[in-house]
Amino acid sequence: MIDIHLARENPGAVKTALGRRGVEPSEVDRLLEADDRRREHMTRRDELRARIKDLSRQVGEARRGGDTARAAELAEQSRALGDEEKAANDVAEAAHAEVRERLLWLPNLPSEDAPDGAGPEDNVMVRRWPSEERSYAEHQRVPHWEVGKELAILDLERGAKLSGSMFPLYRGAGARLLRALTTFALERHTEPSGEGSFDEAFEEVRPPTLVRTETMVSTGHLPKFSDEAYHVERDDLWAIPTAEVPLTSMYRDEILDEAALPLRLTAFTACYRREAGAAGRDTRGVLRVHEFDKVELFVYATASQAPGLHAEMLRRAEEIVEAVGLEYRVLDLCAGDLGTASARTFDIEVYAPGCDMWLEVSSVSWCTDYQARRANIRYRRSEGGQPVAVHTLNGSALAWGRLWAALVESGRQEDGSVVLPEVLAPYLGGRTVIGVPSGRGE
Image (cartoon, rainbow, N blue to C red; front, side):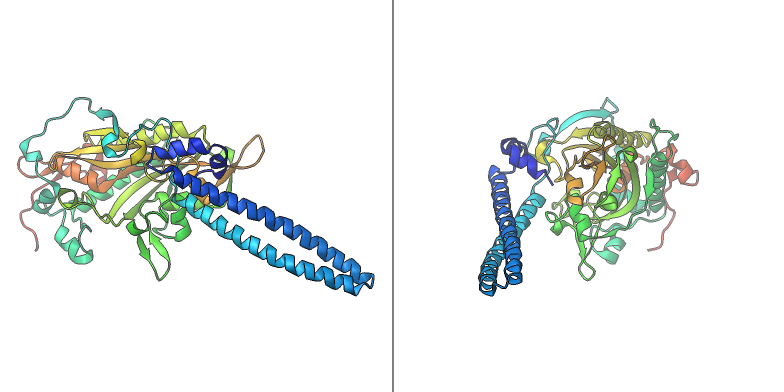
């Protein structure tokens, strides 16, 4: 959540910043009105408590002095003030709940460096790889859902039979390709001297995929996006939409030492989202699904460390796309297209020639102290003083469904087989060709 002190001290700047995200100034006004009401009645409550405490002292003195009439009079005054104190406390608590609720619904302040804009059409392409647009042969212009069926590596019909539409079922080499991508990425991130260009390793974590409500609240996924999440009502647990959710709350309500920062984590999990999508081609195949696998990067950092880490995480994701040879572009998301918790986000989109679409496979976001305030995660500065909120960063490196689709389409050969990147050979038993099956069980 945003800093209420900043909203109090500089409401104009907060309104301007949130206005870039389409938030009406009246939302900030209502927040501050509730905050004023809370502080006013908290002050009134505390004053009344002090007077009641003093009256209790006077009642005791009167009783010890044998002045029962005075003691009774003072006790009656104390009871009357007690009713006022309770009323003031009730108003203060209601106002406090309103302030928290309004803060939970407000998005993060966008970075000054984020481009202006209202939606995806205003995002800025900052680079592409390779620099020259590629050309694709006709045999690469077959969509992955057709290729997957021909090669018996994607069975959408049986996936739907098991769980409903938009739950894909991968088979044989298709399933192994997902596993290979996961292992390849985790080794890249957890080995400091791997083939990538980075010295620092990320600690691998395997978090739970069902989490408590407060864990979802900490990242900003609740309360705003409850309709897009899967909720196990009997146990009041939520299926995670991304490993960012449990990783953010690993240190909830804790104080870290500055010397431990930055704290780098990576995790592979299944992810679950109630993707509504739009009727038409973006719901075909594995372009928009309810369950998918993803390797996540997550970092706790100080404010000064965060910009460099943001760039590193983005580059890590790019290096994986380059390693598997896919054409991609990097987009700087405009203020109006940022996720709720993000102050700055870069998306990576790969080109899928069979779909003739750019597919998002990674979002790398800097959330400043927005999530840490919700989760109450702070660090103790080496020079002393009060603990301050950490900054959090997260990024997919990478999400596999759409990358799988782009690999299958880009690697398709004239004979219908698919050639996969050589870098994945160690994870595919040394084989990088998915051949056309001579027959398959139906």
